[in-house]
Image 1: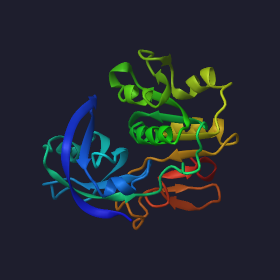
Image 2: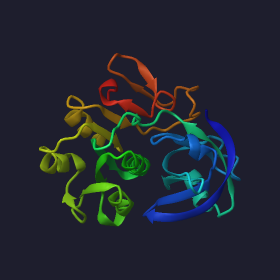
Image 3: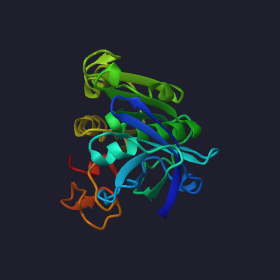
Image 4: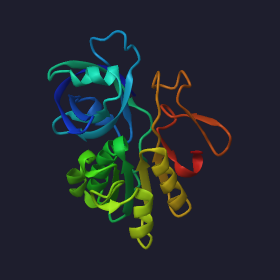
Length: 258
């Protein structure tokens, strides 16, 4: 069950241009949060920003009782978050949504993770959890350039990492769809998970949904975060509308229309 709590900031630092990582003390939340879930954060000391901001949970450290998330600075709300100091308590609602289904992943299972941009952080916690379960994790990461890359060293601790950059300054030259076609066609995986921009999700969906269970974490602007306002819907293959915040954000690939 999601809880509303005041959680103190332990650390905050920049990990890439306009992208920041924030770590919160959250001993209760860390016990229940699952990879792929998110939190809704109220920007402190700015009553004009009355809508909460949704952020995917990146990692959960049960020993330290801490969670982390990243965000891209896009407007006044996230600009205000950059100014938050260590020790400031944030009004947080979470964990929210449905995460990645991994309870049945057994030791030795070859698993593929594909992420790009701000869709990368939630896959880090997923990769760490899958490693703990004994899965063989391969992660494909897509960046605009080497200058905008982050977290690749952390993913390397969980398994094999393949990197693509749009400008060719890091790893494969091109987007992740081209990398998968060039390097992974002969590889065997039994489950695929993806989070990132629409083009990335479409590439993963088209390549893998007929071969194996494939799950996509959708990104969307949200208002309430709890399924009450229908501001973040996505069409499904059975001609319905699902709410990304409460029905997702993770969906089976064959269920959603991108």
